[in-house]
Structures are given as C-alpha cells and as structure tokens.
Image 1 (cartoon, rainbow, N blue to C red):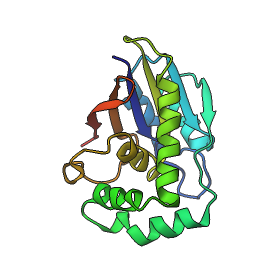
Image 2 (cartoon, helix red, strand yellow):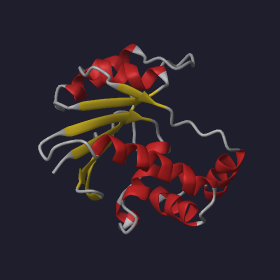
Image 3 (cartoon, rainbow, N blue to C red):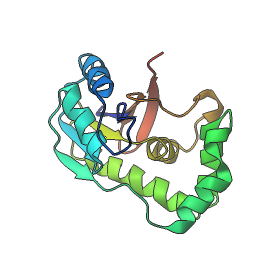
Image 4 (cartoon, rainbow, N blue to C red):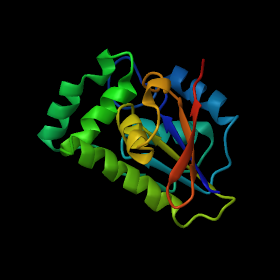
Length: 178
C-alpha cells in the first residue's frame, strides 16, 4: 500500500521571515538521514517548507498552495483555540464538524494529499512538508473516525505522521522527535 509521510517544516530564523535557521537546516539533515526514499515530494509555497525538504536530502517535485484566505477560516480556528487545549486534535475535529470554512480548508488539503497518492503504486510513497495547523487539520479530515484524544499535541519542527493509503487514508503512525 502506498504511504504518505507528512512533516512540519524545520526551525526558522529568530529574526522573522520564512527561511530556516542554521539549527533548522541541521535538524532537517539529521531527520532526513532516517527518512525516504520518496517517489513524490511536495511542499507548501512558503520557502521554509521547500528548504526543509531540500535540507532533508529530497528534491521537490511540486509546491502546493495551502494558505487560506477566507476570514471565516481564521475566526473559526481562533474560536476553537486548539493551541490552548490539552487535546488540540479534538478541538480541530469539533471545528471541522461545524461544516464551515474550517471544514472546507481541512478537506481541501486532505484532497490535495489524496491527489498525490492516487497515481502511486503499492510500493511507492510521498512526502509532504507543510505547516503546523494545516497538517493537523488535514490529518483529522483524512481519518474522521479516529480517537483524537490519543493523538497528542501539535507537531513540533520536523515532526509529523505516516499514513497508509488504499483509496482513502487508513492507518496513522505518529513521527515525534521525543
């Protein structure tokens, strides 16, 4: 069965901006040495995501736009306050279940992931490097019947999950650094 690995970008510069710090490059290199290979690598259009994939040792095949523009999306996300709860995946699931802008956002990213996976053969895999918040929301959308209370907190830098795909996403293995 094809697999999808999703990872949050590495550490960015303290001075702001969108590029990785030197520590972020080194972390991505260490993590990348234990990953892959991948048949498809996709990142968000934000430079730190591409830089993470390259520092991990993987050429980027495509960039995807995952940034939301709908003000309702941000209002719904803020109302859910997932970063302030001990079970952020439960809060994300509740926000998605409302069926509004956040639901559409999470499911649109999940659809991008399905589009990456559909042409892959059983022994192939893909890597997506993205951002905190979007990865977790899409993961909830991909696995709607999971026990989110067991999933822990938001992904830290270079953390993520590996999903099995059989015309839909089935199994989830979390890839935490500590």
